[in-house]
Image 1 (cartoon, rainbow, N blue to C red):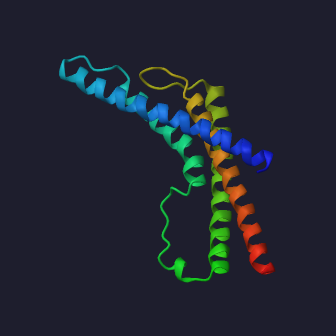
Image 2 (image 1 turned 45 degrees about the horizontal axis):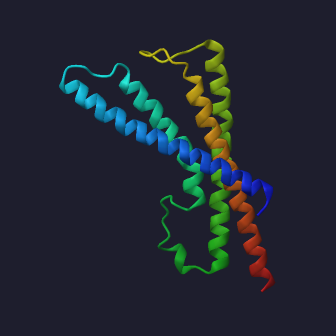
Length: 164
């Protein structure tokens, strides 16, 4: 396992932990807010916090989910094709995904920088939202590098099939 692969695994595990904490916080916050609303004491800014936590969960879950192939895929027809054709299709779709998510990550970093420069904050809590955007951009960047790693693995598998 290469140094880059080990680093990606560590980042994925770190983000997975952050996502787990965020989803737990989201559940606790929702329960406490619902109980508080019942007694006429809702949590101020809970809707904003839930939105922030949901964004954190998505950013944190993407790299790990992709790594363990936990995403949804339609493979009914692809399974009928040869192993080489399956790898070529995977390579094609992963390359398109890499381009898309690399552009999105790059644009998110630019957007976060702009939001930071303007000093924009959330409506109720006045929390600087660029922190959340930077975290999302970082998660998308790790996701893109994870896709790139998988592309290299597919290329290696294709070469092994040609040798046989």
